[in-house]
Image 1 (cartoon, chains in turn yellow, orange):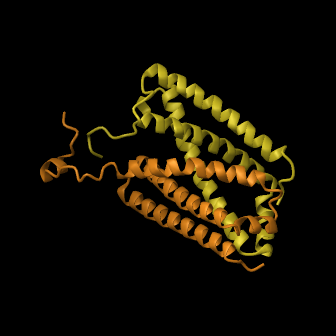
Image 2 (cartoon, chains in turn green, cyan):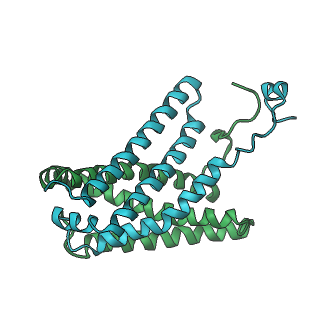
Image 3 (cartoon, chains in turn orange, brown):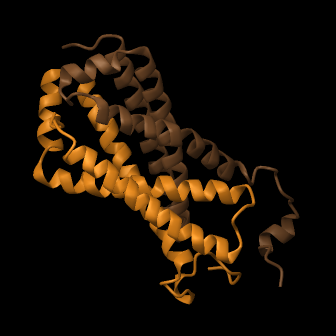
Length: 131
Length: 128
């Protein structure tokens, strides 16, 4: 290993800082959404395969455990969307002061929780959504 | 202390002007994905059911097929850029890292191609 500093060096950080928590949560959410992309493509391919192939895929996609996966994906999507927009705002050079970024971290958490609840409510209480 | 690697100092190579490429593509795909993902979630929730016939009718509309293709391409690209950085950060052995990056690259191209092919197949009239 080279002796120059290499990122990330996790052991030197305090793990509960809001900067680190919001950042690592965004990364985990992104990884979860990569799994979500895999599911989306699987679903599209199943639809393209015809009604029989879709019925077979639907067995897997409507398994009780799948609900847990969808719940996780809704959480990941909501957070990654809102936190991603925060990043785009930062890219314009705005909101980088400590107080501003502390405030926007809370805004991200609050807005993404509202979004999660809204989507979750529409998915599970909004009516007829079984394939 | 200089942050340049010994090799970099010997070669004396400057910036190739390509350093922001990853960053730029990540931002570009993220900007595209904001409206596309919101559209997908709203559209799926607005469908009367997720039955096969309903979905085929939905995907047979030109606008749906086009937006889905853009979404799958942007999402695959964005996902590849993101997963790539995670591997670069946490897989330290260079052989394993290269192997992971190759596999992740191929997997994302496969995902994108399979998604686009499936969408077109339905849009142009899939077998029932």
